[in-house]
Length: 129
Image (cartoon, rainbow, N blue to C red; front, side):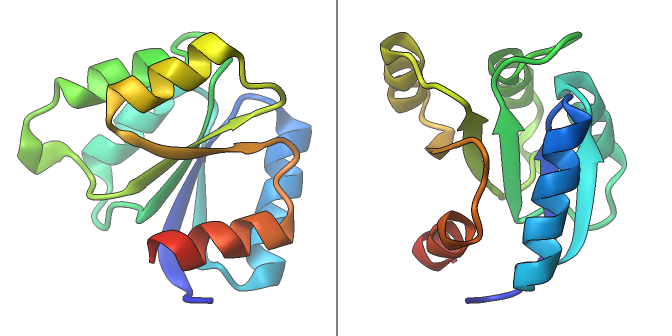
């Protein structure tokens, strides 16, 4: 498995972010893990990041700005402001509507069921990097 420079984890639930950071760090998947609690924090992070993340793990349901709203706002940014990242939605349960929206949106490369497990992270990185 390749070690990425940065993974951006966008999730509002502290227990999940704690677990996912441990999974990422213990697997050696990334040198750096950044956390945003909602889509707006993720946009703010991307606007100031010197080195954009290579992988963004994005929760669907969050306060302030959910995952779908983040993707819509992100798609509206000028191309030079967008990270050339792989986007993967994290969800406890993917509804048929969310799955269709994911396929039709074009930006999201896949989804993983919560909780994120080491084997799933490794498969994700191997598939996209």
